[in-house]
Structures are given as C-alpha cells and as structure tokens.
Length: 270
Image (cartoon, rainbow, N blue to C red; front, side, top):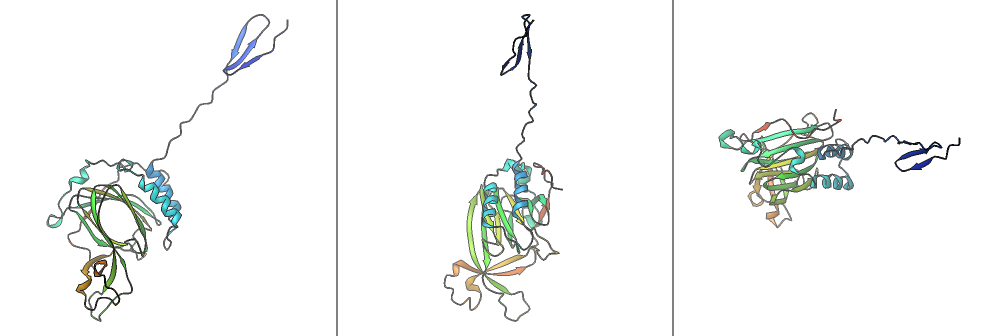
C-alpha cells in the first residue's frame, strides 16, 4: 500500500494516507510575551542617566532638547498627580504663610528628580542653583516666575555687609501649565523665585543636585531696584532690565515639608 505525499497548509500539516484516513498535525504556537511600555518616569530616569555626566559638566544642546521634549510631554498623571490632591489644601506655617511640600522621586550624585507642591499664594523666594543645569516643568497651576542672571563681579564698598551684585532680569511673567523651562549655571535665569497664583505642582530635574559638601548649597537673595544703589553701573541706561541682589539667610517664614513619593516607581535605580 502506497502512502500519498503529505500536503502542507498554513494551519498545520495534513497527512493523507492510502487507507483514506486523514490526520492533521498542528504546529506548536510560540507563546507571545506582552511588551510593557516603560512609564514616562522610567524614561525620564533613563534619559537623565544619559544626559547628566556629573558635576562640572553641562549637557549638550542635543541632550537638552532630548530631555526637554520628554518633559514637554509629561502630564500630572505620569507622576501620580491629580488636580484634587490633598497636597493642594495646604497647612499654614510660620505667621500664616502657606507651607510648601516637596517629594523626591530619585536622587544620585549626577541628578535629582523632585516635585514641589505650592498652595495658592505660596512663595519660593529668590534662590540660586550653583553650577547646575535645571529643568522646571510646571505640571499643574498658574505661577509667577521672576529670574535673574549675574552680571560682572561682586561689588563691594569695603564694609562688613554682604556685598550686592548686579543681575540682569531674565523674566518677570505669569505662566500656566503645562510649561517647561531650562536654566544653566550662568544663563537662563539661574536665580529665580516662584509665586503660586493657584495651586501648583512643579517637577524639578537638577543636574547635579544640591550638595553642601561639594559647595552647591542653595543661597537666598534680597533684591533692590537698580536705582537704589548709588552710582549704579557704568554704561547701563535701561534700569528696568537690571537689579541688585544681596545674599541673605534663608527666610524665616519659608517652610518646606518633605512627603513620600507615591507615584510610578523607577525600576533599576539601585
């Protein structure tokens, strides 16, 4: 008895035998493993590892655009936020000033990821980011931002008082979420102040992060109108674009409470 040739079809192998019996042998299907798309927080972490090379370095323009594009597309829910968060109810701190909350998503020697929660009227006063490149993403709310960059060397009159320094006004405007801004060690508004008009949430990406032991502590400043300092600055006629800043101690009415981060977690951060 002869056995006829086998016939192969898409769904399996059909064997036709001479006795009229047909047997079908199905191919074994490979089990598919679902592809999990990384969260935006995870992608932010991975991108920051590539962009920030360590203290003393500034990201390249290409890396800045790459990180800014990622932040441009981030939404409040990407970090576990909603507009009716209890964070925004706020508690009064010293002399009735609204308390500011801060949560850290991740921090290492090269960069840090933090979120600041500001109730309405809360203020983060003028402060600097020494030798740091900072990306600010306004996730929620409307905020007034005022920022300066240094101009020239330290001015001193020989007294024991902290000298004032001339600074150029970079921005003095109101912004509404979503908005991403970038500041550099010596440009872009390295010294800035936030005033919350409505409840706000700001995602800060800083590289490298603050570090007292590495001389990157946060300094606070008091501002004076350009015309208030005698002699002004030679050659500067537009006094509305400049101001004088004097370093001060951290304001006593500034209070920041640390809260736990409860948003999407970062994998492989150890």
